[in-house]
Length: 380
Image (cartoon, rainbow, N blue to C red; front, side, top):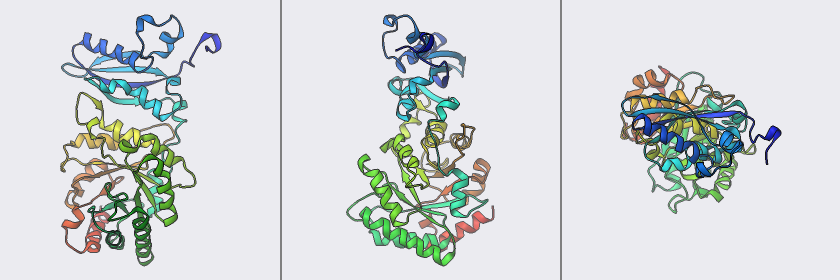
């Protein structure tokens, strides 16, 4: 039903920048197809005249060259098409066009009214620094691994890392509720182990629990973690959905910092012609959903992310985005202490350094390994 003056929308529009392939005519045709596909998904020539084609259908605002055979198309959409829902917002931004070759989302800019529908991170960088008591240097994080260890052994690792000075100790992303380390046993053991270490050191190491799970179990596991004394949650949005991250962040009875894990989502960014930019997938979307830190694979490790890809994520984690606070970029994936000087050039001091398996390469004494990493970080 039309609103005032026969309008369907307020006139307020948000913008998405797409990278398209081909010559100008092909790029313009693709852009027009995106405008229709991402909204009405209906033959354009059959649309009734009036507010649907004029307001609801996406609008191509500009098309400019971006290199040989590449074009940047800026498309605007009525804010009403997103319905104030994160799921529908993502559907409008890429949706069916994710199945079209040669369409890549480079960035999006939301209006203040649309941003207001998403509370975003509960803690952000400032909140995580307050919880850990770390004022200036990068935060230090490690993962409990490998999968297959019993809950008692993982708790021993957690205790050792916390004694050595790690700021966050998290479950590995593949450690969930396996029979060799059941969730209901592992989480209380690890939380208690870190609490004992904190009592000795006077520090505030947080145990971050992996709550990536069947969707009907995510909240249950998160609340179990809270009752056990855990200090944070980790979830993989590509497995559970970005809106599940939003659900966790919005739950005032949890009020726990959230780390976003990148597993299963890499194919969105590995093609320069399709999917999404690194800034969108690992910067803007976790932040919009409510994550307080975004984990991604660092350049020069075992995954082919470039230095600029990672710098792009770091910039997106703090770029102006309404009232949403900046979040921590958390590079990982083959990290070593020797790389810290170069990391400072890319990330400054506001990042969360995630060293997993590399902590074990330093020697069998995990507490001493953590101390060495802490000493390096405190010297920054």
